[in-house]
Length: 272
Image (cartoon, rainbow, N blue to C red; front, side, top):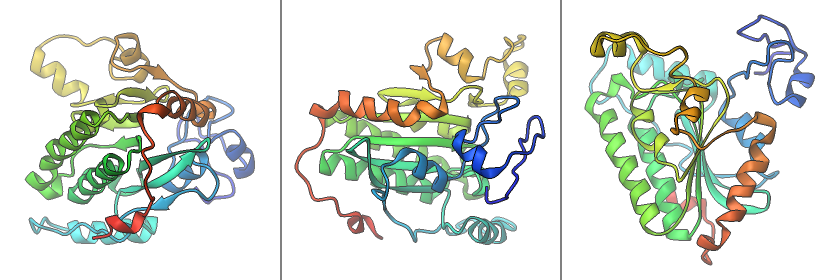
């Protein structure tokens, strides 16, 4: 997103980067919401200079010796200047503290490997221990096939962490963006106490062709888009990108009395 004139990948319109930033990275011609990386999301949604990162140097291994996986990991690290497909930490939104995680589509389409699952779990545990709500901004192609069962285990692991947070009476909010699919959609993404989504986001488990072949029926048009899911009760609210920070701040304020037990925020506690 550092180009001077980024191009909308839907209508191919060029935008001056300064104007695009002011428009919250929404195409002025077709209204397409350009996919955002984790640093931009954090800057857009958190209070200025309030974000403190957890587990910054946690890296995935190659437990199965999957062909070319190590090379793809090295390229993703070099391209993104990050060690994993998610950035987690603590921040304030509209003056209220929360743990905050953002998945980054630049890093192997934010697929969920063992490190992504571990970082989400640690973030939720930190929320529970320190009386803080938790917010996840989700964008993912699903479980990372290169890690096999180690990746699939993260579905149960993160879901259990959400359950423990809920049992403690603390809120968990998810924001689904394009795309939210596979094992991520089948685990923590759909477990938020309040589930928000951006418009026109692809949200689902399997692809439409697989579903149609499995059930032997024609599928409704756009049935995996966020508008369809909201209309059928799978989402709580569609939110325009320019309103996201205000909506998240309002949610934190509404649930303020359920959270914020006295605690010292120390992100170094979660370092491996």
